[in-house]
Image (cartoon, rainbow, N blue to C red):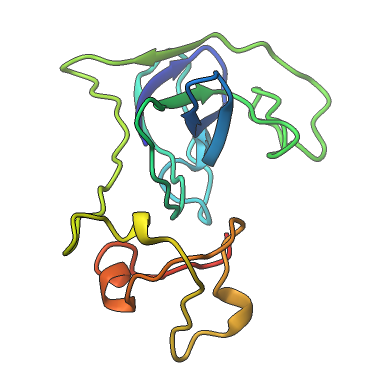
Length: 178
């Protein structure tokens, strides 16, 4: 997810969630991710403070996943500033979460315009011979030489009859545990 956003706080989190909404209204979470504003440019590097009110670009990695959105289903993207308890809270003060004691309410603004094109990129698996995509042929586990069996199953049951070549051209790492 590419997000252009501003906050009134000295630091904040931005979260994104990809959701498959079924025709009956059931919302199935597919994948989610988070970025802490002060680490937006380098998750493992030094903190880079933000200026309250400044519109910045954030990249929220939703990691690898696969889902077939069936006919009648809707794709929903949820943007928030928290996904607790899945991810640790952010005090919005810039203090360290483990030692900080003060909290601030943050006013968040998500921008979506020609100047600030917030968007999500969803790759599409192409159809193969027979008119079905590799994802639609989801039937039995793949065993890729060199990958340990413990890493070959996602949090969903891995049931794909697609060849490793079909999947690797799209996913690159078939059926990894998330």
